[in-house]
Length: 301
Image 1: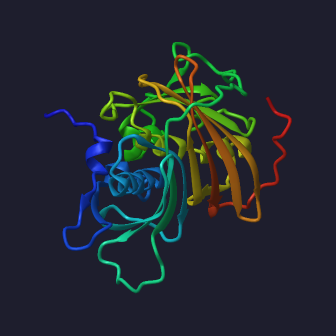
Image 2 (image 1 turned 30 degrees about the vertical axis):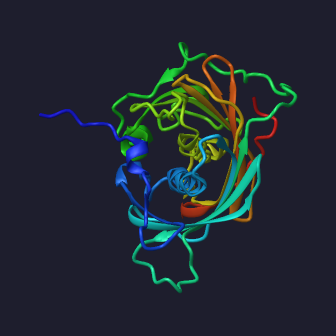
């Protein structure tokens, strides 16, 4: 039997310019990055690559991006239009509209819209305002390979493209667990390394790692009959620093869930203690089974 090859995010989110329409790009998104549908972070990666291609200046680096998910995106053929809304010497901002290629051009239900800011490196202060989180080190983190049929790291194709170790929290799919704090942290590494032209970790590869926030809500609720899934309403990523490391800590904290939606944020650190990125997300909570519980996890540690 031939070994299963891991997916390459760069290849699966590559963009190709439309020769007939300036500012338009085509993508064929693989289904190897799916949960039930493609990861919203991976869709965001597609849109980021469109913005970078539209700007065409490698010295302008993406520093922030906010994506609104208007309608679900399926894998397959996508089309995106880029609009440069500001082009300055130090900062450029781009709007990207991405949809299914087969969608009618006049369809008001756009797939996603993203606003991206790209900056040129400039002289400025270097200030550290947060400390590395209190989590298990990479060496002490919990492995996730246990063969359980309900293990999300084997069930979902997205996680099959990553190596994973649990840094804060437990193996939440196993029996005998109790509810915990509204926090969950993983060490994650792409099985196929993601590098930019300078050999750094590709900034476009960060949103898929950030878009792993619902697990903090699962942990706060704990075991019980309530089941849900949580598609993104919006996702913002701030790209803070560069790293050449492969393992990244994704430390997620749920801030609030109420009235069928929730907000959370995530810090990304490399295994040398470098603060790499920060993300925030609003999620739509779609109930699958059971009654929504009332939980106060604010004082749990």
